[in-house]
Length: 373
Image (cartoon, rainbow, N blue to C red; front, top):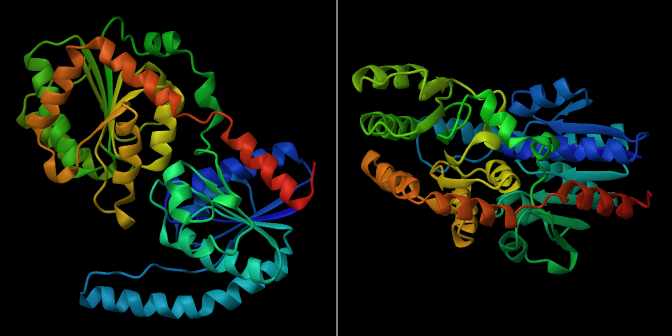
C-alpha cells in the first residue's frame, strides 16, 4: 500500500498527519508513506526528521489586507496556484499512491483534488470546529471525511461520509503518571498553573501572565506557575519581570519553549493558552481545566469556535484577546483558586470530550477504504 499525505502551514495540520502516518505504518508495516508540502514551510523539517519521503509543492494563501507588499504576495500566490495542478499531477504519477489524505493547509487542496479526479481513494481530516476553506472545497470530492467535532461535520455538509473522530494526540500523553510528574516539579500541594502562547509566543499573553504572576506573589499564594514565553517573548517577559519585581525560580518558572508538554500537562491543575485544535485535544485527553485565549490572527477565527466547544461543555473559560486584561485574568484565576472542586469538575468535563481511540478509528476506516486488513 502506498499513501500520500498532504499537509502544511502549522503544527496543527502537520502533527495529526504524522500521527496518522505512524498509525498506518504500525497497522500495515509494508505501507510506503510519502508527504507533500512546501519546502519553506514547517512541514519540511517535521516530516523529514520523521524519516518520510517529501515531495515539494508550492501553494500560498491570498492576503486579504490591501497593501503593496500583499499585492506582491498575491501575485506570487496566483502564479504558484497556476502551477499547483501540474505539480500535483506530477507528484501523483511519481508516487502512484493507493490513498491520498489531506490534513489541512493550502497544499492539500491541489493534491487531494487531483487525486480524486484521477480516481485515487481520498480522505481529509478537519481539526477545527470551524472548517478551513481548503477542506470545505474538498469535502464534496473525497471518499471519506474525518471531523474532530460534530460542529465541523455539520458545516462540511456531507454527513453520510463523515466520521467524528476527534484529533489524534501523541500516545505518550496517555502514559503519564500525575503523581510522578508533580513530584518531578517539586509541586507538593501547590496548585500548578501552566501558561503558554505557542512556540513563537503571544505578546498579550506574556503581558497578562506577568500581571498574574505579580498578583500571585503579592498574595503569597500556594501556586507553582510554569510559563513559556515563546521565542519572540523572551526579552519582553524578562523586561516585564524586572519591571514588576518578579522572583523567578521557586514559585515562578519561566522558559522559552516547553520541551516536555505531556509531563507538564500531567502535573497541571489549570492551563492558560491559545485554542489551537491540538492543544485542546491534549487538554481533553489529560482532563485539564483551561482558560482559553483564542488567537485573533487565524483564518475564519477558528480558534474561537474551537474554544467554544470546551466552554459549552463546562471545561474551559473563553476570553477573547480584545477583552483580555491583567485584571480580568486575575479575577478569573482568583475565582478558580477559591473553588478547588471547580477545577476538578472542569477537568472531568474536558475528559468527556476526549477521543482516545481517534487514531484507531481513522486507521481502520482508511484501511477499509483501500481494501487492506
